[in-house]
Figure (cartoon, helix red, strand yellow):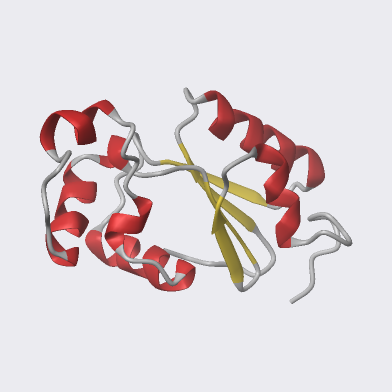
Length: 129
């Protein structure tokens, strides 16, 4: 996964309203945006590990416990980090999104306007290397 400090990177599910609104807000703020649809663009295990390391999170932390796949297959199940990693790769719809990176920072966005917290003083237009 390439993390470019001059680019906003958004991992999202475009059919989810919160994800689409976050993407739309970020795209209004900068032309330097790369969107990754986690349902269409296959994320490898190595890439997911990089994402988790950058977020300083474990695989279980980015599991969407409200997703149908989680409820049907994993609710109440205890898994190791390695097993959660494999579950997320096999079932990307279980990934909690949107996840946004800008510069050295990243976050799981709970409300679209939180994307501004990555650079509250300048928005994304004042990109620095």
